[in-house]
Length: 390
Image (tube, rainbow, N blue to C red):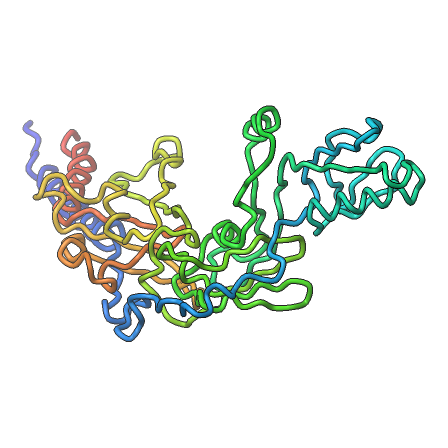
């Protein structure tokens, strides 16, 4: 008796069609990249025709009158000093200013050192040696030599990327050991105001550099630091214990500030993703390499290229799209920008199409339509092949 195989074959064909339609609908509906609405170029927060393209030059008459009175380096906790007393080796040695800002020498009561100059501290020690009858009057001669400036913590607020406490003049332990063994002094420039601004992430593109506020001992000094952007002279005072810096906002994006300078970040960190096939774990997806550093002032196109989203076979790599997830630093509102790679390549100078990258931005890439169709066909083939074997 012959078996009729026509019905099972037609049944399998019907099931395969239904299964193919269902899988295709599912893939097209939920698994393909979700195309976000494009942010119009004219509406992007960095795009405004009335914003200045260049910073106004400082006034020649007042730019040399900016430094606070008595602008000199002052001692702070952690500074290391070499003390020598003529005629008495009992006090000679290398000392460090204690956590409370006082210097402690043998047999001498603690001497206040914080916020004093080295010369003023030497005079104070000389007077104390005589007052406490440790050395006769006229015989006390104190010499102090700086060995190393310590890190210094100051407060930074306003139009910087990471406001808060900024610890400046930090050094690696290896560098400290080398300086201790070979250096006979310390000429570090990293305790100036500019160092505090870069440590706080650098100034934002809306910073008003003509009115930087230095609050010291309850008094506010207004500084014009625009000259540092273009290599001109500008106020850049030494900082002291208890100093506070505030950077006001101009309320406008300034493209002239979007480049490396003594006041901006030397580089920023971005996160990039270009995974054609999703990975099952972080090790497979090379999670640790998704965080990369790029120069400050680069734009979305450079970030997309950094993620390897540009190039390759035209048929499968053309018409790709990229998404930028950023934050408006002035309003702290999230910004999501969806751009076609072709549009970025065609309009690299348009800040609305190709915006500047901010610290910790996220750049992701979508595959082209050809790649999506190819992967859908491959998935259908893999799922339907077992049915043909029944």
